[in-house]
Image 1 (spheres, rainbow, N blue to C red):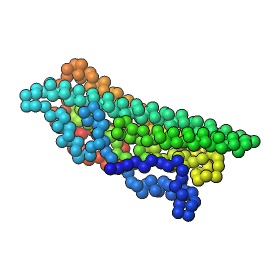
Image 2: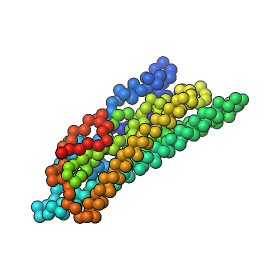
Image 3: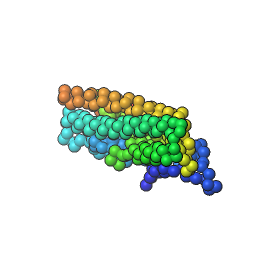
Image 4: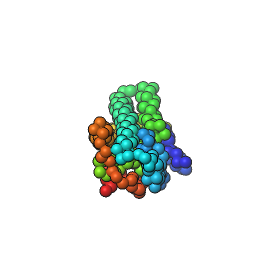
Length: 270
């Protein structure tokens, strides 16, 4: 079973006892390759499912009995879609809350760095600021490991998006939910950084801290874009259920090969 490495609070020293470069740490992470885990939203929850299992699994969930009429089948499909969309929105909301918390703590870290640069501070004052900074950094590392159930909210490098097969009125659509890559170069530097002392670690500057804070903005924007898409889909599903509409795709769910490197948000299949 794949286990996402838990970033250490200290820099892993080289065999010679020296602090490695940021490039070296980034290359180590790249050498691990993408996270091989793949997830599917089905039955109102997110499960670990390989893409080639999508079609048979979904057909098992959505296959009506021989006596089921088309309108009952449509209602069953729409109710399943509603549950799936709500599960996806719940995941994105937890992701958004944790991204905002990381952003707030990065702002606190920047404040501590600025305080440490005030001239005339005594060593014990600087050590106290470093201790507060390290606590703040470790809290961020803990948030980066947060899950929604058994599904990681974030990735530490490349990962496959969470898949959701959604029935529009005429065709199946594939919605993909990103697990926000927080393994950026600036975040790597920050997670092994310090503002004072001679212990192993990178001495951080203001530019690096600002870049780390900036690196959270794109995931937040992407999270909001995906949330809007799911909310729009959910409104459509609720409207069709309210109108007792039988407008769902006639064909079964397609088998969709998903690349581990795919980051497409929205894809349709005729």
